[in-house]
Length: 262
Figure 1 (cartoon, rainbow, N blue to C red):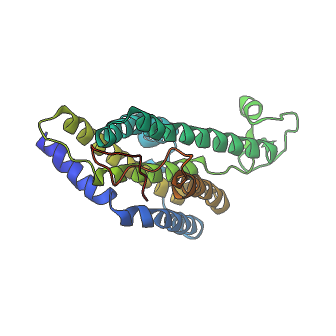
Figure 2 (figure 1 turned 60 degrees about the vertical axis):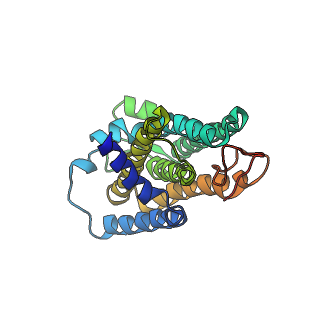
């Protein structure tokens, strides 16, 4: 438990600072542009991470929203109830996960439709020989063809959105104080470690996407959608009274009224 607490303390110190929430969006955008320029001008040699079948991509990035959802759900529930003691407020804050799910679904569906309506089926990866008989990506791949359309980077979108959402929700730790002998302390500590490492994985794989996959415009649009999803919620809507609200950062167990502060 001591090693877990030490790890949680390090991750908490690195991710909970206001400066991280302020500058991480800019850092992601800058690294995406820098990685894309590197990919175009001086491509890195092939590596394990450039293979789409690598472990991190298959078991984490492909289901990034599921990992984020499943770890944030207990974290938000435990920390918000510990601070406020109000089940209604906890349910209200948990609705951020439903909002996030809606953003994930709408954006990924939109990306898929854009790729479909801008694409064509070709006989080879060199985009030779159009096969007009195949009108969908699934049909094209099923017959051994290669579909080429405007494929907005879903990885750039989702990894940006998930990393920023986790960092925003972890801001509540500024207020959380628990007794080390209490089971709640162990649960929150474990969740902090899990969410911290998950954030590091998301950022690392975002960088790998920038230097190995997609072209610049596809990554620009993907990252832009991730930033808009984050800012539209945490930077705008969640500041309103008719929203799920921001994580409570000026609360106590004797809270007399709901309070959300930036």
